[in-house]
Image (cartoon, rainbow, N blue to C red; front, top):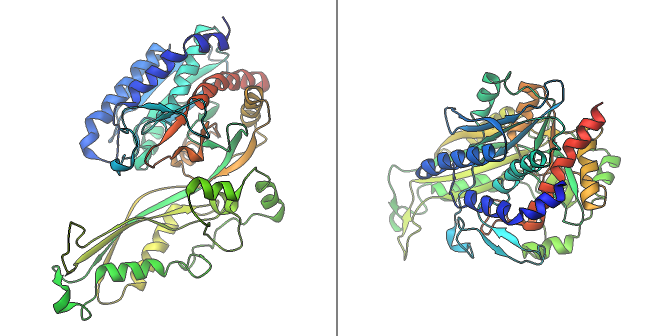
Length: 461
C-alpha cells in the first residue's frame, strides 16, 4: 500500500485522534490546568508509541515534561529531530468563542471550504505537531521511512520554553541529529505554499505603577494626586512617536536593515491589503511609517501592549483613584537584536520617564532571539521540493512575524539548523477566540512531511 492510500483509508481515525488531544485543556500559563497539561503529555506519548515510535517517555523538567520518542533504523543514516509543543494559549475570553474552545467542532469557512477544526490548539500547535506523529505512522506502515527520526514535544512553549535550554544541554547526546523539523508556522494561503525563513525574537515585560498606598476618593483627591492608570497610559503612549517609531533610546541600534533588493523580494509574496483589512474588519492598517505591511510584520521590531488593568472594572460606578496600575508589554525583535539588551533598555527607559508622583516596577518574563534560516541548505531545498510535489507549485520563502525561542536554542546548544515547515494560515486565529485549522491543511501536512524525509535523504548523498 502506498502512502496516499494509507492516509485516505485512515483519515477519520487521524481526525478523531487529534480531537482526543484537543479536548484536554493543556493551558500552561494557568496553574489550575496543571493536571490537564500533564494528562496531555501522557496522551501524546501514548499516541506516539501507537504510531510506531520506540523508547517513548516523558522526560521531567522543572516545569512540564517533554514527550520523547524515536525510530532508529540505521545509525549511519541521517537523523531528523522533530520539535513541537502540546501546551496551548488560554482560551479567554470564552464568551467570544462560537463553540466551546475544548470541544473541537468542524465548520466550513470562506477560506476553508472543506471545513476547519475549531478548538484551542488546533493549529498552534497540537494539530501541527500531531501531523508528524501521523506522518511517522504512515511511513512505518508503508515501509517507507528512509532515515532515523527523533521527536520532542514540549509543554511550555506558550510560556517561553524556560526549561528547554536546560533540557537540551542535559540531553545533548540523546538529541544528536542532522536537522530540526518544526511545524509551528503558517503558509501564505492554501493555494500559495510558503516556508518561513525568518522569525522575530521576543522580549516580554510586565510593569507595575504604584501611586498612593490605597485607592482614593476621586472627588476628594482627583487632580491633586498622581493617578497610576493615567500615568501608565501616558508613559506607554510616549513610547511611539507620530510615525509609530519606538522612542526607547538605543532600541534600533542593532536592527538589521534590509537592502532595497531584499525588500523587493519580500514584497513579491502575494498580498492584498484590501483583503487583509476585510479579513480583520478594520478600515485601515497602522504601523511604522515608510514600510509595507509585509515589512512591518516580518522585518521590523515592535512594541505592543498585550494587557492593561487597574482600578474598578465591576458593574456600575465606583469613583476611585486607583493605587496601582499594571500592563504587559511585548517587543518583537529582528536579526541582530537580543532579548537581554532590549529588556534592559526598556527597563531603564521606563523608570526614567516615570514622574515622581509614582513608583514603578519592571519584571521581565521571557524572551527569545530572532533567527534567519538558509534557503540554500539541503534541508530547505528538500522541504521546498516536498511542498512543490503536493501543492503543485514552488513555495515562497517568507519572513514570519511570530517567535519560536527554541529555534535559536537549537542552533546555539545543538548546533543544528531548523526548517520551519508550517501548514497553518495567519487567518486561523492563533491565540484568539475561535482558533481553527483547516482539514485540508492537516491532511496535506501528513501527506507532505514524508516527502521531506525522502528528499532529504536523497539530496544528502
